[in-house]
Length: 368
Image (cartoon, rainbow, N blue to C red; front, side):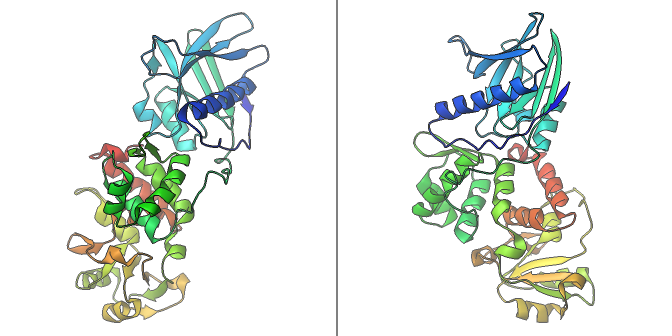
């Protein structure tokens, strides 16, 4: 049974965690009720005091004949990959995973894991073996427009980039001052950015303000809503490499204050033994002096449509101070390379996804 439903519900204004969870459950209950056939009902039952804490409520689905199915509701305000962390059953009840908005990859992962789900925009998948239930409803094609009261700052600029790079490379918990020191920014800058990251569901903080969980993939996705390789850095200069990309890449190894990004950067960050998704056809590099680097590399200026090399000054020159070296080649920090791939046209976003999947094989923090 399917029932197309869409909603423009805004994310709730953040209060304490209990109130936010209650708001979410109320919104999801409405989504489920809209998805049910005529004569069916849905109600939320409170979590018993004896519960082990693995669920936030119980949702009862009752048919016109009186047959009922109870789901253990797990409400997430911010989380890692649902399909990897949620069991199929809790307290002998099938799990119903609920969230403000579930994009297609999350819905696919949950369905593949056999976990029912629902979100505040109308996406619903309820599956039960006893009694037999299979209800599917469509929600919004994309995340609802954010309530601007939640967004305290744009996730762009050098300071934000440093904080995000630090969050990706640091194992929580970490406090504001420690994060500021790691990112080489002021505590005030960290305090300005973190509320937005919490509201966007990319990190979690405890009552003391420490960051206790980071969803790296969501963090990268949210960052690139504001950041873009070609719009956030220095003006890109376009060239053609007359002797080919491989020759230019070989020469890059001898340059100072230069770091590869883009497709070759993604290939360099792949774990050893992993083949790139697509071959490198374009050189993209950050450098402190694009004109000087182009002269050394023998690049010829051309119009953007025919270029196979792009050089630009990064928005944060500190990434050139001591770039990582992969295969003896200077490469931009991993989060920067991922963000750049996600914001380049063509198949580069797919390369970013493939890189994160490859990283997840040895680092579960990159798991979806």
